[in-house]
Image (tube, rainbow over all chains, first blue to last red; front, side):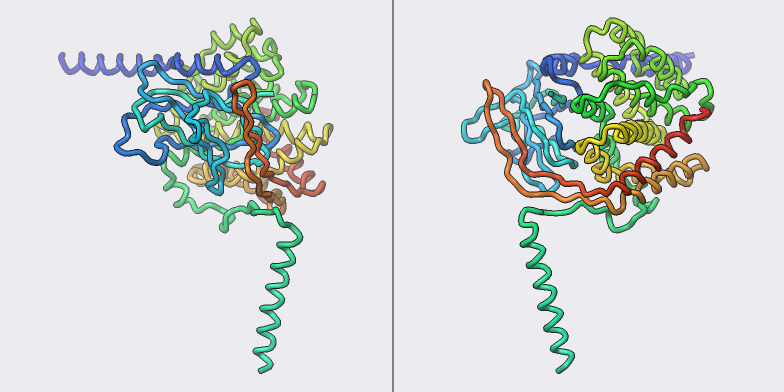
Length: 144
Length: 307
């Protein structure tokens, strides 16, 4: 009897998990705040602990960017993050084409517009400032 | 002695050709070429990590981006490009359902971008039926998307929910060892978006659109790699893989080159705007474009007509 109850409970949990795929409010808020002229394309949910040592950005993803398109890369953090989410983008020759963190001034931009003139596959690198723990989302939109 | 003279002559010729080509294109940095092997060995593709597959999925151009380009070109909306004849009730196999789900996803993106949201209700119903048919209906928030479509109130929310639903379906399928259905959905989206672009370019031969079509060469190999583990699964998949190879053949002589340059950053009202000065240049003849248009139409029509 106990065995059946356990199986039933597992099935209920599995069913709940499958049905419970709701949109993360941090993501939807970030999308909605990207600007009235921004049209959503993609998002990257970034959750990182404290880095053992400073170094390369830890969250890496790829996406294709297309010529004659203006993209907006928005970064949003959850309130309990110790660091702020920053982004740098490299092209296929490993050259940095964009960074939301100005190393000279220390300024962090919550979003960056990028006028793409070279179609290709780009590497998106996210991390939190100072290698800190954080939870955030990077949203990619198109703007006119 | 004579052999050595010929060798010197050859070396001089190589140096001269190299110098000459550098002089003729001082800013050209590189050229995109398909990888050495024309076909991806099945074993190699099967070794792709989950992360690599997720990357390939991200690399696919979005139909929303094609629709955005059409709007930039002031191309009016036309329902003629939609796969209206597709009947979800006729899609019997999981193969057909997943591929059709992709095709209709691209159409939904096109309708949403042009804010023809009232017309998208039929497509939404078909999408729901197909998604439920492959047991991923729980990721498609049909009622909310339908409400947003009818209200025409919040395009951004509509785009987000529609794209997010597809992203979640794709991830769920991959995470649950149903990668073949995820691949089919992605291929369906790409073929329909490619069909839209190639049909529009016949009437509006704008260089921006021609370039976008030519630049699909960049991701075509990834698309083929995504499908290749399943090419020998059944006759349907095998035919689809051959179709993708046919498209690739038409792209073989399309050239994509790049010029060098450093990005220019400006701050406008506190916001950072970066202008890329590097450029990708597409060299594609009218005949090559015609070949791509024709092969895309033929393959897409086979998938859509009488289905």
